[in-house]
Image (cartoon, rainbow, N blue to C red; front, side, top):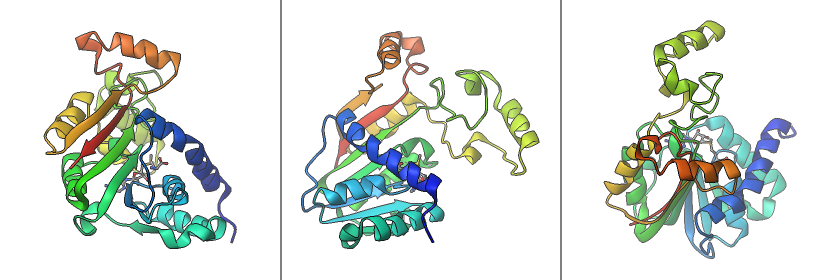
Length: 245
Ligand SMILES: C[S@@+](CC[C@H](N)C(=O)[O-])C[C@H]1O[C@@H](n2cnc3c(N)ncnc32)[C@H](O)[C@@H]1O
């Protein structure tokens, strides 16, 4: 059976985003001959990227079984020369062996992880000593489109302006699948301050941290506005960070 066109398009979009992901982290490390974990690999495009750049082995994990199935099938059909170098698993990071990876990467996933402090701790122990975590994600929940459009709040910041109970009531009216919280939409709702607290308390060294990494004019404007302490939360839309064990 051919691969689903929409899923393939998503994978290809990821492919074009990968160089930008590394730019925003201050440049990409060498992947040559190292063991890498991609947490929240989705369709697997970052795994393919790193494997094609000489990684010894890339393990992509995701809790979404359909995405893992797509990622496996896509590599088998379209990148057979990389198949031995990539493994896709539907599992939690806690199921993987400890002290295993030279680097862990996670792209556009941290805002979806519900127990982030616990998961980051599990990531830390999967790293070899001196290993690094490269993470970039957004939009942050308190930024204009921090609900990823999922709360259908219509206006920018609408998801934090309107009470959650009203948003949920509206969503449940229109959908068969009933939810009881924003977390049921796959968003952890963490604020910029909470992410920074989690990183600072992780027992990992923060060796790179950038907020509002983007070349867009609107992002540059946001970076000026976020200097005003009260507005910092609402005008910070993404985080790019490198942590070291
Ligand atoms: C927006 S997608 C990003 C996928 C991919 N990294 C990309 O950039 O296209 C976020 C992914 O994180 C996954 N995810 C959420 N929580 C997770 C967890 N605790 N462990 C592994 N994957 C998780 C979701 O299933 C989803 O596929």
